[in-house]
Length: 292
Image 1: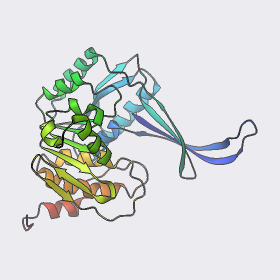
Image 2: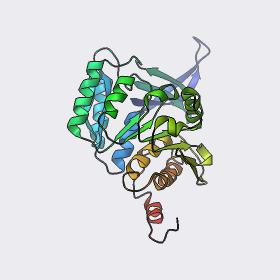
Image 3: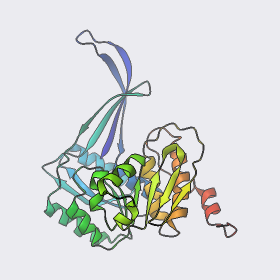
C-alpha cells in the first residue's frame, strides 16, 4: 500500500461550514504496510521481491516507482482491474494528523491470481518468506497453504482473526492486543503449540518484548528512549527477526529487533534501520566472550 501524506498550514474557518480551511504545503508518498516491511528488509541488505495485488491505476505506477527507487523487485505484483491500489491518505497540520481516509478493496483475490503469485515466487526462489497480513484480501486460507507448500521459513505479522490459517509457519510476530485475541480465536492457552511454530515474538511496546516457545517464555527488557512515533516499529521487528533468525537463534534475533525498534520509534514517520545503526548490538550479541 501507499502512505500518502498531505502537509498543510491552517488558514481560517470556513464560512460555508464549521470546518477549518487548510493551505497545502507539501505532499509525500511513501511505501506503507507490507511495502514498508519490504523496504526495511532491503535496507538491511537482503534482495527482496514483493508479491501482492495492486490496481490498474495511477497509484500502481507510483508504487512501482517507489519500489524501483529502493531496488526492490516487483515481478511478484499482480495487477487486478477489479480493485484499486490500496492508499492511505493523511492530512497533517502543525504536526498533528487531522484526518485519514483510505481507498481500498478488501475482497479476497481470485485463486487464479494466487497461482500467478505463487509461480512468480517460485521463479524468484527466495530463502524465506515474510508475510505482513493487513487483511486486504491478499492473504487467504488457500494462499497460505500454497505458501506453506513451498517449504520455506515463513515469518508472519498477522491478524488474530486469521490465526487459524497460520498453522505451520516458522515464527509469528504480534503485539499485545494481537497475541491476546489470537489466544481467544484459537481457543488455546499455548499459541506456539497451536500454530506448530518455532517461536512467537510478542511485542509489549515500551515494556520490551518476549519470545514465546511451546516450552518457555524469554523476556527481553526495553531500551529507555524518548518515543516520538511508534509507526512502523512492528515492520522493523519482523524484518530484523526474519533475517537474524537465519544466522543465529530466535532469542538473539529478538534482542537485536528490540534494539532496532528502540531506534526507529525516536524518529518521526516510518524509518528504516541498517546494520550500521545496530553495529554495537551485533558485536555484543555475537561476542565470543558473551555469557549465555
